[in-house]
Length: 334
Ligand SMILES: Cc1cc2nc3c(=O)[nH]c(=O)nc-3n(C[C@H](O)[C@H](O)[C@H](O)COP(=O)(O)O)c2cc1C
Image (tube, rainbow, N blue to C red):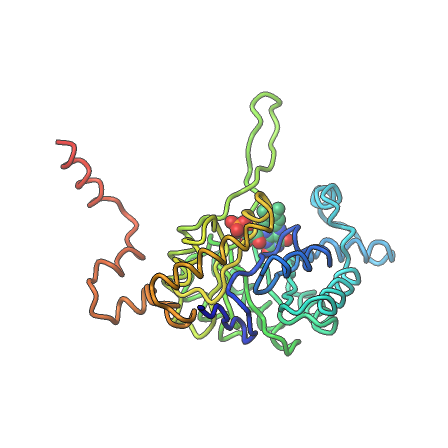
């Protein structure tokens, strides 16, 4: 019998599989279903700053700067999900389940984050995940400025709450380990690699633009989990592209403390969580590992770098060009 228990953000998880922020974690019933399916923890559907703006507007205190964004959120029903609703969801989810409940917030400015985080902490959230993304639209704004906004937000939230804070990053940043290290210094206890986004598309018949659903990229997460784990003073969680239990094993070997999964459960049902767990257990039994700690990070860049294994194993994390592969395949075809 293997022990799947692990620690993420200082919280005890019965296993490392976390249901990532998505529609499955938007209601108490949804959170209960995740617990029943075997989840180690859940990240609630993000609270968006735009939702708060609607509350302000209802109180005649504010105005909308981006009407299109509001339309988009209203059509998705997201604006019904206000700060008080989310606080009630957290309270009920905590009362009705035993697994850690992580609140998630997504804001466009640094101003409102601490306030939201404190409210969700008071409602009983075990941790808060900051879902930060700035699309660098302005040709006059350097990348460093967007990174500075990340530090500012994390610093302010971490100072405002006593629960652990994690940051879910976008992959479109320059030096992820350096940024990660500075976010840890600003108060983040974990990095979640990475978020998923709507992608632009063009309908060439109707001649209009539209948003297409993006995809979590498993290998992108695997690379950066492997490069960051054990080298930054924080937990690393993966998010992106998990389809099979073998993917969970790979991410833990790369050093993930928690493996977040969303699309698979949305598409194939939360029952898939049990399949991931069974596969993880079977792999551990087959390889003689009694606990997660016995193999977590075993194949991380840091571990391989310091071990006496072949250097080529660690090289896989930073190799990004195809010269050798290309040469090998052309030689084979001769
Ligand atoms: C329908 C849908 C809704 C999502 N909503 C959120 C959200 O509110 N906040 C967030 O941080 N991530 C959200 N995500 C991103 C997921 O949490 C996850 O990071 C991403 O989908 C990559 O993981 P996956 O490949 O397992 O889906 C959403 C994903 C999907 C598919």
